[in-house]
Image (cartoon, rainbow, N blue to C red):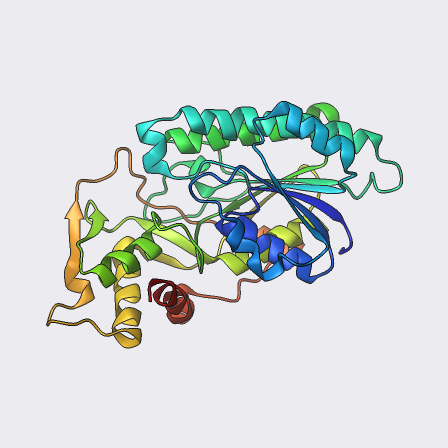
Amino acid sequence: MSGRHILVTGGCGFIGSTLVRQLIARGDKVTVLDALTYSGKVENLDAVAADPRLEIVIGDIVDANLLQALFSSHQFTAVLNLAAETHVDRSISDASPFIATNVFGTQQLLSEARGCWQNLSESKEGFRFIQVSTDEVFGSLGSGGYFSEESLYAPRSPYAASKAAADHLAAAAFHTYGLPVITTYCGNNYGPRQYQEKLIPLTIKKALAGEPIPVYGDGKNIRDWVHVEDHSSGLIAALDRGVPGSRYCLGSRNELTNLEVLDVVCEALEVIRPSQGGTKYRDLATFVEDRLGHDRRYALDPTKAMRELGFAPKHTLQASIAEVVRSYVGDAS
């Protein structure tokens, strides 16, 4: 269902900007609200910056006065909440920003969205609030099995705990007030324009600089890798076809260890920009002390999302990594 007026929080970030570009491309009007912290860049939206259907508002979802003014002056028909502090290491060092943005900010956004929804007339039935969550709220898996929409929450890092709290507030808004909330879960995203602290861009940056590439622990922690374009398409599918009150796992069935990801990235780099001086990029891998409370494995079962939403990931990391690496090599030139 195109033609909506959608508020996308965190829309200048890696995932958010990809989502915004897809929404604009299909004809939606989009207002982006982004605090432009360290990982958000207006430049991520350069491709659609001149489109009259895009509005960018610089601000924080923690700012209650700003949210009230924004909802008072706009008649949104959907909200996608991607505004979040997300890096686990940062949450271990200081959880305070995660509690502020992910918990208090989400609650304020839910409150304003509820007022907006209650005041709608013709478009009230189609209003949706999409709470974008993470597989990390479910804790850690063993060697087999998958997280599903029925999995119990068991967060094990300050970041995951803050996202779990946000999800519970969103679910409470649905059950208490009837706000049409849908919650989605996804694994590790990858693609162009990702902030450099994440594994793939960090590996590329370190490799090109000839610096040690840090690998936590034994490097065998497993993640489900999802291309950011596929994740964004899944979010739009949830917006268009998701059932209020439902949860959807946007998994890709593309599990790799951190070492396997490093291998794939370094192999692509050797083809695109061959290493010099006799030291291969892969030789720069350096094992470092493991992250505190590092979960061993995450994997999501996307069956429900495929059946109900038509979610169908088009990428695997192995097949798409060359294009991704080229995007970063070009930036580094």
